[in-house]
Figure 1 (tube, one colour):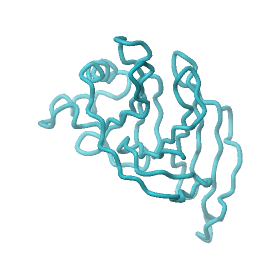
Figure 2 (cartoon, one colour; figure 1 turned 180 degrees about the vertical axis):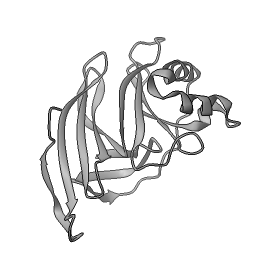
Figure 3 (cartoon, one colour; figure 1 turned 30 degrees about the horizontal axis):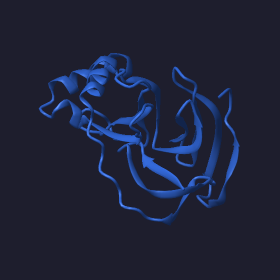
Figure 4 (spheres, one colour; figure 1 turned 90 degrees about the vertical axis):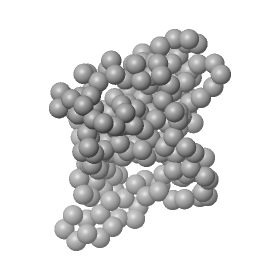
Length: 195
């Protein structure tokens, strides 16, 4: 079973199998609540914001009447009594973040008991799927991002210790640009350029 969660909301939305670009529901399960943000993660996130966002976004977060942590969703997708532990963090949207098809995705991990949270992946997309393959205690991740109205990119990331590295990329063409006819299954090809 694959657990699929929306990058925009960083939350599980059900048990799904990704059949190329079409999500086929095998069975539903209740959507868990978002994880509360651990206080020490919020400290790390505040510290990282200048590296993650330009000054206009940071200014909006700092001067908003909405509490800082309410601008983001948090979903703990690796939880155990012993590290590693990992949380997906993603901006929610207006007023400080534009509503777009792709959203920022930040994965934070804690690899030692009592250790700090640190950012292990910074990317964007609209869904993330933790895979069954693990490296150094954290699962490989599949991230899907819109490329255009008819194509998506599907990236695979592997945890290498200091962070996640992209190990694969393919482009899925969902429909014919001229006619709008959907391809079933979508046409698949390697991404242009290096992963």
